[in-house]
Length: 506
Image (cartoon, rainbow, N blue to C red; front, side, top):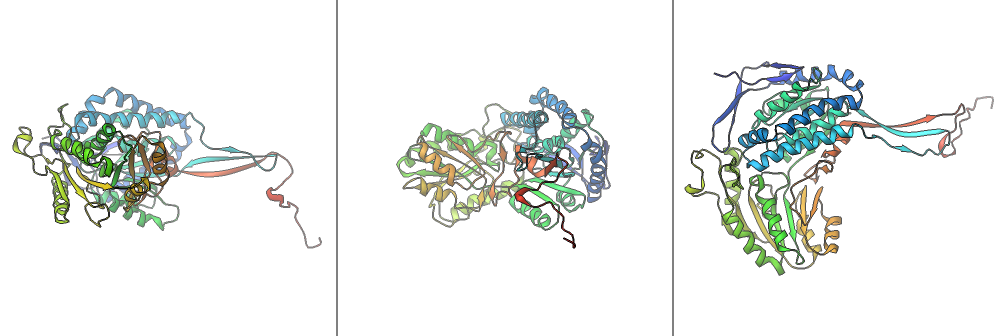
């Protein structure tokens, strides 16, 4: 019998303090993909100690020297895209083109972070005094704890870690328990790159391991992507601790606004992509479609037709559009929300909660299968199903009448503020949406998925706390120091402040 995969701590593969293990399962088939050591708080503390010990030497390297290790990782990601894409698909269930895209996005993030090492970081600004230089420098904060979700099991870890490492921080990585195989490969890549001992560490496991990262006094920054419930717990724990920082990107109840000036081909395609890619299991997936009355009937007819026919099946097959949900517990949650919508009195248009037997691929009967659930609802009704994140292919059609102001009012009627899109050929409508929609990620005439790494990724309101990941992760993992250097032998102060020292005799 194969030995369980181990943690990676201080440059070594270790079994850890505990004896318990857990399995990774293919959500499409139920088959075991491997056995992994379950990390304990003691393992996390060991990893943090290693990262803390490695920090001083790592920060002494130049940004370019640190980036060299990332370039090795980048080339491996590029060379193994197809292979690793299949691993992603097997472990988290999204169809194969998305599995490969996950690896490509990871490569993009590493490329951006490593390439950014040769770009200036800081601002040189004019001083009020001619003899002074004024500028800003960034400093690494120290040990960074990275807690990542299962739905982008290769891309998001690199969103967190690539910039943190280039900027001189060390890392303790706790991946999602649903996708430990992908995390194992990430650790192998850093090991292959020869990254110095203790700079990168990985502890597999569950919430107790993640909590140990948050509570460890030597972890300066926690970068988290996942549910709002967990993210806000992290914020609450660290918010009152001097010097600590939490960068949390959480969920959304995202919407696409389709105005009367929309190109309906663009609108339908964008809505389908946003609602059903990754089986609706993206933090940026659209669960609300806000459609103007003038185009509502045609849009509804076309969207419903696709929802009824879109292919659910083996995610390793190229002709599949929707794969399984990640696990049985999540299938139960999504099915319960579908039933809740019925109880709240919506008009159900498509219900593929329970798929026909011939829609489930042979040999995949143990997978967590579900299809689209689409319904009409009153946009002014106080319904749980239209306000709470479901994280599945659960989509509400909300008809509105009036102008773009009304559409944006409905868009903003949620505690969340992550992503959204507006579909319109009227630039004034797009500009109004741009300025008024309460979201961190906005799109015009596009799906509300498909972020690019050179942009910030994060939300407002319940969806985040102002420290986004991807490009702007630098704000989470560095501190800025404002420097003023005097080049004169005389002291001259700003604002006309006198530099003369008065004595008692004066």
